Each structure stands twice: as structure tokens, then as C-alpha cells.
Image (cartoon, rainbow, N blue to C red; front, side, top):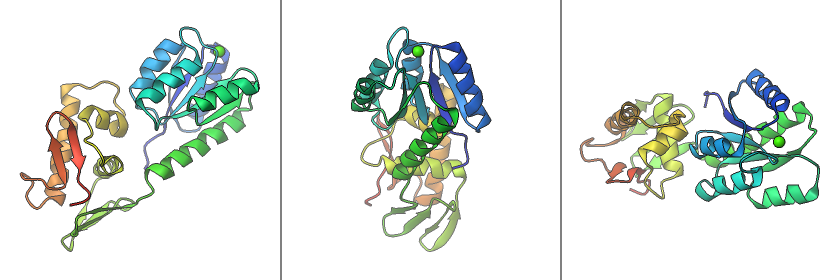
Length: 234
Ligand code: CA
């Protein structure tokens, strides 16, 4: 997918933080930052970041606490801890709490960028290994090429439509709330009425493309009070 990778940097030391922001902006990332553990956790909870760089020694709440709190609500969030020392204890503790990787200070910036890219590659391939989304017997969607055959007829999708489908497909074991789609697919932090409508409009367009009768959806269904769910098994 072509959108910029979203990175959250939680680091209280100004020099390191501004240095990191500059480097990752230079490498094409969409970067936001927090200066302490409390606001860092707040931002992380929005779920809109592809990866979080999390310092251990932070005012408010330390990096371990922040990591643990993120994991309680999001098992898939990619996190790299910045440990103050190469202390093995810190490393083991951080990984035990669910960090994907760690980088010990002082670190080489080039190394860190490589680690970030490696973790993102890993999370991306595990999330979107299936390039073909099958719905029932009649629909085969090629997520890479933004097209499908629906009852032997060709259909084209926008990239955003495919991103919505792919996200619902990756989480088809449950209904996905609109707010979650806004966070994960659109990258919006807060939901407003107008943005929630954006999701509904995309779902309506998708239904016209994949449903036999868009008013009686069989594949992309609405779960009352729960959000949208893709029924892959039909
Ligand atoms: Ca620190």
C-alpha cells in the first residue's frame, strides 16, 4: 500500500527526539511524537500508528508500563523499545512485555532505521499474506491489482476500498467498529460524525460491487452495535 508509514516516537530527551523525528521524516515516514509516558500511551491507544518507538526511561509512566498497557488492548501493535543501557534485564523485560524488538542506547541511527523497516516488513507480511480474498464461490478479489471477478464479470476497486476489505478480511472472526476502521485504514485519531460517514459511504460502494443485492448484503454485513463484518465463509 502506498500510504506513508505512521510512526510514534515516545522520548523525553529533546536532542534524541528531534534527531529521530528528522531522520524518520527524511526516510518518508509520517512522524508524531510524545514527550512523556502518559501522553505517549494516550496517542498509542488511538491505534493509528504502524510502529511505536518507545523509550524506557520516561517521566509519567515508563516505557515498560506503556508497552504493557498497549498490549492489553492491541496485540498487533508494532513496538520497538529504546533501552537506556545494553542491560540484559531491560531487554528481557521489554521483550517479555511484548515489544517486537529493542535498540540499546547509544544506537546508530542507520541501525535503528533498519530495525524499524524489518519489524514493519514482518508485521505487514503476516497481516496481508493473503493477496486473494475469496467470498463465497462467485467472488475472487485480487487485492494487489485492485480488481475482482464477481460472477465472471470484472470489477475494479479504489485502493481505499481494497484497504477496507483487506482489514475486514484480516479480522473476519469478529465485527469491526467504524472507529477502528477510521483508525487503522484512514489513520484518523478521533472520530467525528462526518468521518464515520466516510466509512459508511465506502461500505455502500463496496456492497454495490460485491453484493448481489446491496440492500440485503450477504458478504459485508452490518452487526448491530458492533460495526461491519466480512463473512468470508458464505
Ligand atoms: Ca528517556
